[in-house]
Image 1: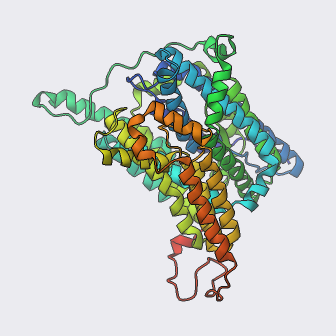
Image 2 (image 1 turned 120 degrees about the vertical axis):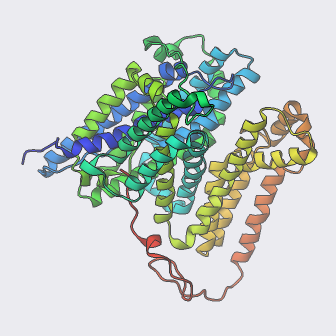
Image 3 (image 1 turned 90 degrees about the vertical axis):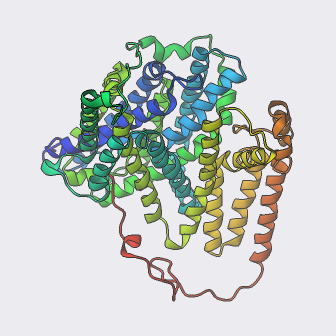
Length: 572
């Protein structure tokens, strides 16, 4: 049977997948750029980071498209749908806030580089880290199923839920929608109606596209009314400023990191300290890739899991080698794209559009005309969807573990708010410095600590006290070397004595606040907790109340609402 690789359903599928990728790239642009010295310039991001990132999407979607043709030939079916691939949203925000911006500030403060050279240093750190992630994903791809068996799902998904709530959903609400509610809430309402409540628009217009267009139209209307009635002293929206000067595409920018002038040893040394931030995202995409492949098989398209994972790892590695900073990942929406009628044309079109537009700098037009308030509602939906999927894919009795994983991320959000409000200045009061130091310790390495906390609690809820103690002991080892709970302003791996010397040299005012929160204290605390659980594991317990095997609800407990146990909905 002849494979019908293109159809009308590919149009909707293309807009959904393309807008997902474009939104992630523009999110990177909005999040890390600004007028302050501690931010990147838009021109630098567009000419250095975006081209290589876009080429990673091009390579990954082209290979996934080829796999769809191969599957169609193998099975003789005409309705095969290609697996969707795109940029990973959680790691985009994680890399932005935890790698790129700290590396820029480190280059200025510690290496005494000017702004341009500090941006180059931070970019080199980002691409080096992405290349290391790509190598890790290629090597670890065959081990994905083993990771799923060893680490409870609450641990793997808890960190993603934390990123989804704090950075993907809340930060856009804070930075993009709230400052311009007339535009942002209108677009967010349309997103909630179409993508969350699953109500179709007339003519089956994609919800993401409609929300962006609505935001643009509302903003133009606000500007028009402001122009007509602005003389009365009020404005519906801030007037459009002159666009940031964006230089034309520069092919040399992509390969400048091969020059001999770069201090690659210094870049590698700093990038290695950020591996605790990056590796949880890489593991999440490996496990997520397995889930995506299983989801596609349930919809009728059985792809080879190892090839799917190796492709996303190779695409991430290629993107890093070409100057990209965001990893690629399979998207969970394959059944939704298949339901739309998508085949292979939508991934081919996405690969060509994103690759070409990103490589030649065409996204500058979107930056000039689309406000953040029109784009960020899509990210709010992504954050809500990731959180909802995390709860749907986790047993009900492990819900407390998911909630526990979010707490370190909330500490990071509070510390970030203090930093943005007060800048580098330290609180004058001793109580204020104690609060800041506690937030630093809780937030540093929050992805790893959230994963370990959730895994420890999930195994404890299962009655596996020795496994829970092992996770806490692992957390103690991570704390000892500064992987989590580092007392420094930014996460840095090192021996406890080295970390304390750095703290005393860099921020002596914080010494009194940190003296009881050193790596020794955190490691000892986890060790005590592990010993408590080990001791309790030898204490005989009465039989627990009988649990419902389907959802983990004990007899006598309130039954969950139908929404709590319904199958997860899939994003557009």
